[in-house]
Image (cartoon, rainbow, N blue to C red; front, side):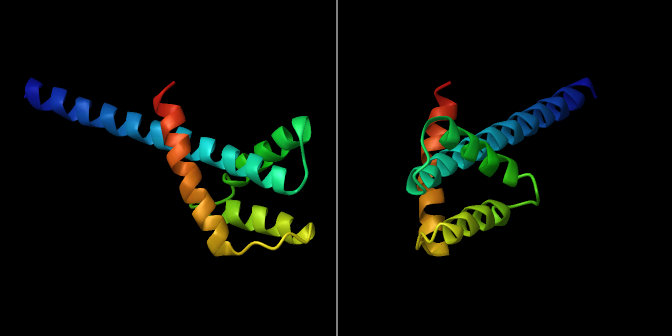
Length: 106
C-alpha cells in the first residue's frame, strides 16, 4: 500500500508542478503581449511596464484568455489602432512560445 501512496503523491506533485508552470507561462505571455500592445500604443518605459501589469491582472477576471483579449482590443479601439481579434490571437500564440522558452530557461 505504501508504494501506491508514493505513486499517488508523485502524480499529485507532478500535477501541481505542471499547473504552476502553466500559470507562470501564461502570466509571462500576458506580460509580453502587454509590452507589445504598449509599444503599439506609443507607451514606453514605466508606462509600458505599468500597462503590461494591467494586462497580466486582466487575466484574473475570468478563466481563459477572453479577458486579456477584451482588455487589449478595447484599449486599441480607444487609441484608434486597427487590429483584429484574429491578429491578436496570432500574436498571443507567438508570445506563448516565447514565454515558455523564457520560463523554462530560468
